[in-house]
View 1: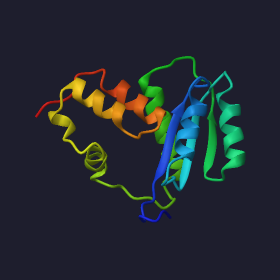
View 2: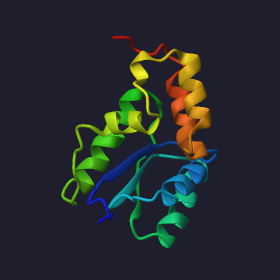
View 3: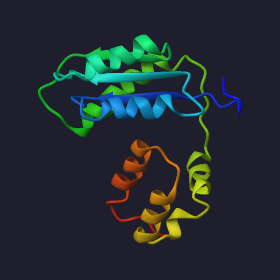
View 4: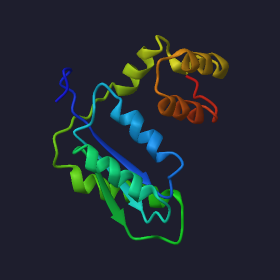
Length: 149
């Protein structure tokens, strides 16, 4: 358990993510509050994703790889299936659902993200101390129009 008492599980669906999975692993490993368990669910990866995750799992006992059979299609439904399969495997572990998580993330920027222009939000992300992987996630996430109140 972390000093804050927060316990969480992390589930990552992955299919042929060799170009990004190592950076993602480093980003999670470097967090000050690590998950109780991080389950990477491989959706039939045919590249080196499984090997990269397996090496990390040997080094960190809280990382686990679960391999699903290769599927011929790649769509959002597959990601949802991977997540649900992963959650069924680890839901019994201790974790908390924190209903104010996004509010807490917004406070990291000391702003209400719903009231920001895209340019201002991008600037706040660039100035933040987020890991490169999380920063890229925010940047990808704001390619779509930000919701307005």
